Structures are given as C-alpha cells and as structure tokens.
Image (cartoon, rainbow, N blue to C red; front, side, top):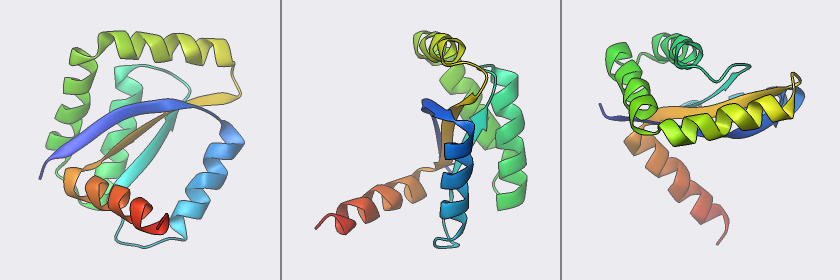
Length: 116
C-alpha cells in the first residue's frame, strides 16, 4: 500500500479536538488520519503515525518510511511549520495528515461531489 504524509497547518487544540470528534462520526471506512502535535519533530510525528497505523491495520513500516521520506525531502517546509508553531504558542498544535493514497484521492473526490 502506498502512503502519503503532509504537514497542513496550525490549529488551536480545542478546534482540532472538535474536528476529530466530527470525523469520528463520519464514514467508518476512512483511511486518512489527521495528527496533531505540540512539537514539530520527526519523532513526535513518527509516534503519532505508529499509533494510527497500528489501530488502522496499516503497514506500519511503510507508513513510517513515508513520514521519514517527507521529513528528509522537505526540510524548508518542516522549518517553516516549526517557526509557525513556535509563533502560535502553547495552545496550538501542528496538524499533519497521513493516509493511503487511494483513500486520500477518494476523500478529495467526495469533497468535489459535495460541492456540485
């Protein structure tokens, strides 16, 4: 299975929690996970992805390698979000998204269908 990972932005903790609760009430077949961390470090996101992978039955090593690959190839993006998180303060999280590519594509297509 092919996975994708990206850093999306900064969110207040309560907003992230509320969005996660909303997502849990949606379709159970969703194979995209949104992750929040107080730290912009590879270790913090690897820990989040490992927990998500285990609970979703993903191939853990492949999902973790996707995050490592992103981190190594996108150092400027990582540094940008590290600075934005520092600027945002302790009441905020850095949000990332991990999932299998087919599910992410299906998620995007469903968003387009909703807007028709």
